[in-house]
Image (cartoon, rainbow, N blue to C red; front, side):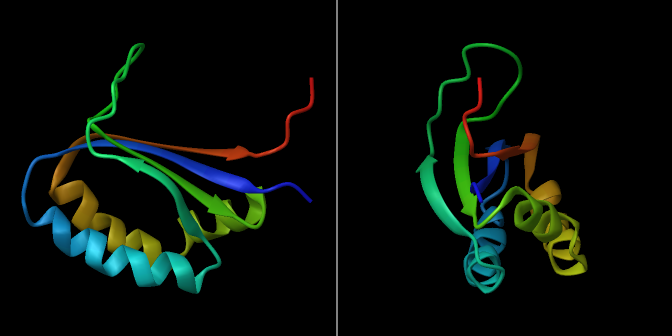
Length: 98
């Protein structure tokens, strides 16, 4: 089974975003996810995106979907929304099948 990923971009607008990060780390580990890469000064070269770029790895795409749809994350995401703009989350399968 291939991994699943969240591709996340956002522009942080408020120092209170740190509350989201503090709560997010233990939550993501509790659902089997882990931060694969993070850049606080990502460069979006096409489309709209923020300076914060994060890739989060899950055991599967379904696990990534379930984590996003969980009531715990939906509540936690309110902190992200209230302290950032230009937020994008893409959930994708980690396999490469061409």
